[in-house]
Length: 178
Ligand SMILES: Cc1cc2nc3c(=O)[nH]c(=O)nc-3n(C[C@H](O)[C@H](O)[C@H](O)COP(=O)(O)O)c2cc1C
Image (cartoon, rainbow, N blue to C red):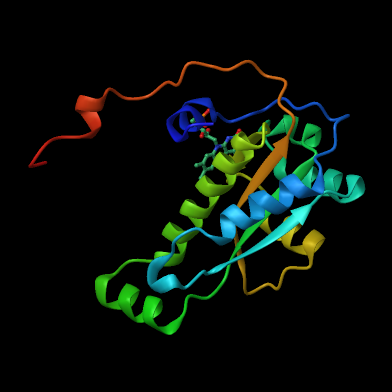
C-alpha cells in the first residue's frame, strides 16, 4: 500500500473480530517497524510488551476499561504496551538544556509507526492513553519506577472506514510565519 493510502486508511479501531488471532509474523513486523522509529540522539527510550495470551489479554483489557472508557478493549486480540525507558546521556543533556522531554516525543513517534504498520498488515489498531497504570504495572510486572505511556490495541477490524474529522489546513498550518 502506498504511504498516503496507509495514512488515509489508518483510524482508531474500536471493534475487533475476537475470533481471529493475529499471526506472529505480523506482530514481528510491527515490532520491527517500531524498532526502526527515530528518537532524539538515537536514544530509543522504549520497551515494548506484546500481549497475545488470551488470559493476559483479558487482564490487560480490564486495566484499560474504566469510567465508561475503552469498553471494547476485550475484543482486541493483541496489545503492545509502550513503556518509557531512560533516555541516553546525550538525549537527557539535550533535553535538560532545551527544556524538552524527548522520550515522550520519541514514544509518540513509535506509536505512530506501530499503528501504520498495523494498517499495512490489514489490522485495526487504537492508541490508548486511558488506563490504570498501577494496575497494568502489577499485571505485567513492570518496575514501579517506569512509566507506561501508551497501549496499542490490535486485531482484525470490524468497523467501517470513517471520514477523518480534522481541523482545516488553514487553521493548523501557515506558510513562512505563524
Ligand atoms: C496519546 C493518545 C491516547 C489515546 N487514547 C485513547 C483511549 O484511551 N481510548 C480511545 O478510544 N482512543 C484513544 N485515542 C485515539 C484518539 O481518540 C483518536 O486518535 C482521535 O480521535 C482521531 O481519530 P482516528 O485515530 O480514528 O483518526 C488516543 C490517541 C492518542 C494519540
